Amino acid sequence: MTTDSHFLQQRQRMVSEQIMRRGVCDPRVLEAMRQVPRHRFTPSEYADMAYSDGPLPIGQGQTISQPYIVALMTELLDLQGDETVLEIGTGSGYQAAVLSYLAKTVHTIERHAALAEQAETIIHELELLNVRVHVGDGTLGLPENAPYQAIIVTAAAPGVPPPLLEQLADSGRLVIPTGSTGSQILELWRRQGATYDQEHILPVAFVPLRGEHGWK
Image (cartoon, rainbow, N blue to C red; front, side, top):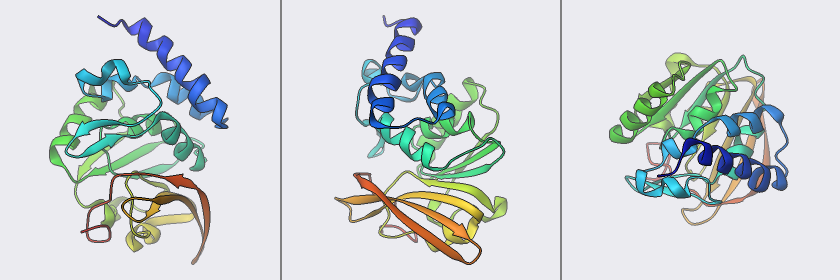
């Protein structure tokens, strides 16, 4: 049986060897990655691989993202602690758990009810009280709680869903992978009033974002 102390050691190595070495340096992000028990968000048969350098299947054709990508996307949001964040694609709930350490409130949307329920259970067990899990079409955003100072999309869209740009607060940041179903670019969008600045970060590979403004 793998002990919690063993997982803690694996988590420390994950941060130092997979994340810091690749250039992620925000101390708050690094500490959040050290704190969140990634193995709790993976299926039991993959628990021993939870801190490996890659994505893992979680069911429903979805994955838990590579730790480095989680850390990088989180760092790009430049969270200071007082933000309301919207995540599109709850999946396992791991990304939302990381965000919970860095923001005031996290709203996360998942289209698969079974995954949303499972993620919500783990988040509740970990007493992450500032995370709200919703079931629905993430490409529509969550207008009732907008605007959001940060939006993160954890599945690949053909382009940025217009509702997400509309729900982004002034000076807010949106991180999203866009492109074809086989190859995408991670993008950072910043809002300045009615205009948006776009920056290409690096090539990535995500599962497709389904919904009205995603892949059909």
